[in-house]
Length: 387
Image (tube, rainbow, N blue to C red):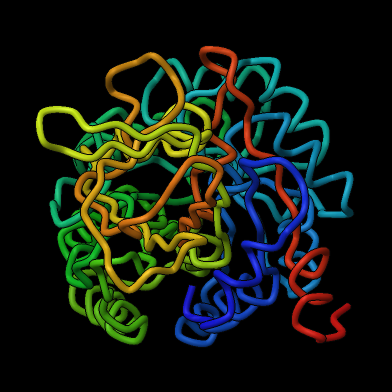
């Protein structure tokens, strides 16, 4: 929320809260900047981050490709005219029915990280191209990776050889360094593993066509100014040149947060105030379960930029918490808010375009935030004419 008029504009928006306001121009700018820093690399937006149709349409018009984790995501892309042949299906474990329908639709590249998944692909997508997910352990990411997916270099090579024997195409490798990665050098260790796999496969006459460098590119939060994208791009290029015996024919990345996080502002209403054990609690109509699940995932380490409709110069710290009865439903600790904040005032949480509405549930009966694009609200207030 760098626009000095943003809080003033958002305070006057109509409609019940909570709702997310998306600025599609910021999405477009983020995509174009990333694509410019990584020339020759296919950018596949990770739909799980925020699958709002207007985001998908804008990115599709700009030439962005997409990464999916389910059949429902593929169907949403087909509805806006995306060619399934350009889609990466990067979920390493998929329902068989999803594999079969995606294959019939034209998806031909599928991730895997185990023999049972290869058998599933051989049965339901015979002849498909397989890329194996490598395990990474780099640290330095704000939202931790729990190690659910991925295998070591030796096993990755064995799986790709097995894929060939099963009638599948040994196509590539993929990895993910962790969400909100702040260290450009995080890709180095993973690329060292990639090099080991490529050399192993070369001895068996197998040359891979795809290297999927994953996502993890960071966004700006209240207490974080991430390194420039140029540093990430340079580190990736250096790692490829240093560790790989050859560069696969196609390089890909799967950004999510870096494209949409800073384009979103969550608008919420204060529903209650309390003093407990000497601490000030501000209860909102949005919380961890209906919009800010990453507060729980990160142990409240994600510090969203926050302003309020009072805009008072005098501020006091508060615990910003959600509406449910669950004691874990807290977004942030010690947030400076106007000292005279009261019930029915509005709170504005920036960098909220990623993993908010897509994660949200109706737990405890509280509403999932609606989503509106910026031109529906901000343009009339600013006097701008936007298409």
